[in-house]
Length: 362
Ligand SMILES: [Fe+2]
Image (cartoon, rainbow, N blue to C red; front, side):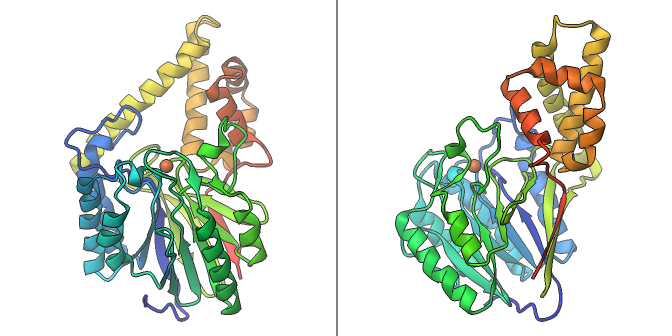
């Protein structure tokens, strides 16, 4: 049984896609801080302890490959929290079984995760804390599959347990690695969205108000009959994570930026600079030959604004400003139907635009 919340507010840090790797030289072609794993995770876990976090929630792809060494590294960090009596709720992602060790995963992590009830057909489980019940779902399809699929038996288990928790008047938070909602840029939504898609109806019918997921690596909040928080990746982007205050009558979520200090700050700055330059080089390739040097540099700057807004979850706040800027509109026009153009347009779609905070009332 987890610490009881009573009337006090319970502080959870929620993130996903640690992609923790024990490899001595992981590639950092896409994820800027991949080679700084140890110092970054040391600093992050120190912060969790120092800031009196009650609970850490991880929404999958917690390891890079699911190798025994990666899993042991993750366990080592989670043990630091267990020593301080900080709870952990974690669901796996597609990467966590690239090497396929379901039994070892269960053996290694479940004594620490302490499920209240477990699905016999997968690694899905539920855990209660006061008036909250967390469903940590296992949606991995198989070795190296990017899809997120709940087995038919798991959906049946979910159905039964959701009904039970509703009868108990518990507030349910559903956690999965893959997303409940799709974006317009997704050429192959089956690589991003949780299947079967009627899980959403099941959750709504049982009064579930909040879903948290990962997989996209950038932060996002979707609103529909049910709200979804897509949690960002610490090692990439603007190094954001989510903070969730869980009270008896409301949940308050906000995105926070992780601040590095000391010599690590210089290393992070340098890694991020390289990553940003690589991204800009891709944009420049698409924009080049169309205009003069000055205009291209203006367009690249505006794309940098968009990227910063997107990575810090503030697209909603910056949408009007971007749409009033001629250099940004020109860049968007030139990016056309490229994957980047589609992505940027989808992120600015008025019906799907995302913010950096969310409040849910019960
Ligand atoms: Fe993933």
